[in-house]
Image 1 (spheres, helix red, strand yellow):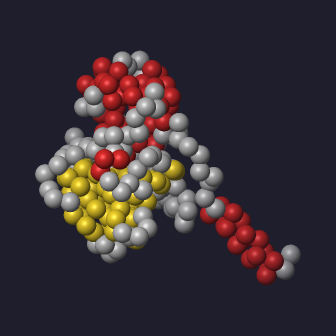
Image 2: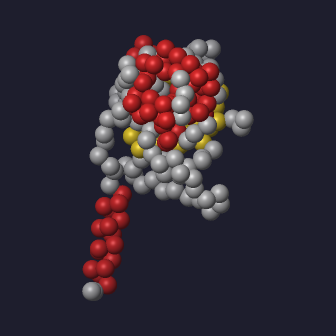
Image 3: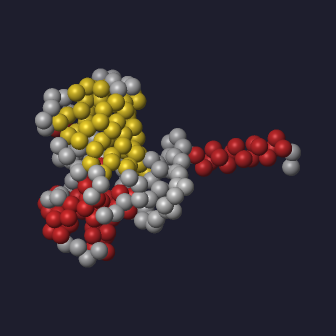
Length: 211
């Protein structure tokens, strides 16, 4: 085969691998319930381990409550599992050294809810110390959140597009613009909204404190 055709075939295969998977709605409730029952845990036991109330856990399992990613991370941390394990991915372990994961444009595990479209980046890499996420904020008002986010970790974010408003229970709303970054303690209830034309888009990292 001519070299130019080989190069063309390789490029085509790379583009095919880089195409994003079709977005499917995440049926989180049954997954979380199956995971809990697989570990022979009651709702009360999960609430004690995670700090998320029994009523909230019950609503999440029935798909009556759309949890924020920080709430899901709090559940994962309390159960001592990778966030991707709750989302249905293989909870296997990667080698301790020489690890890497690549998320090409448009790739990642979708975890969308009523207020944000989230894409978990490099989700195939297990036992990470932090979770990288790309998010488009659909909410325009804090009232659109059934519950505000809270976790035992810390968050770093950088705004890519639009105007992001960070709401907190202890601070006045803060507006961030493209190129702005922020680092904050996620143990205080918080949420994000967009303002102005278009939805805000950001890359953020949720890191958990060492036990």
